[in-house]
Image (cartoon, rainbow, N blue to C red; front, side):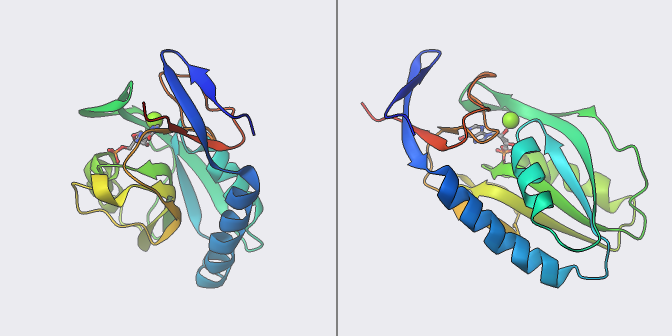
Length: 180
Ligand code: IMP
Ligand code: MG
């Protein structure tokens, strides 16, 4: 892990190592393997941020499972714009399916809160959330993840799929905004 990295105008420091991330993902995957055995869950990754977490989580599943992706967006820079748009929608029926939404991070909860009714309208058998990160202190909407790899403090992070204005997603470890 590098000591400090600069992305655009901001400096970030190491926060969660890729080894620790892998360990926690194996831990939640073990729960999902038990909870969804014989249910053929449909993991629904929310792009762009979740693509790395979704890929790693999916490879830890040893049960019958499917994966698909949708694209929602509500963030610009380091603060939420408050607007959620569906950029790429659902392409298959969720009717009767056990849907597991896969997110990179639940921050205010707005993204998922505004999207959940759309999911429920399609009459799935169940809907739960798996998220890489949650920021409990930032939560403003009634959204709860059944599976969360890490609860973190209310600061901006990059890496492991999460970006700062487009950059940083390819960092294998997670970095946090440096205090000045
Ligand atoms: P929410 O709708 O406020 O829960 O925000 C969720 C989305 O905001 C996530 O899917 C991320 O794309 C983005 N986001 C929230 N916090 C961070 C962060 O610390 N770093 C990078 N992206 C973030
Ligand atoms: Mg994002």
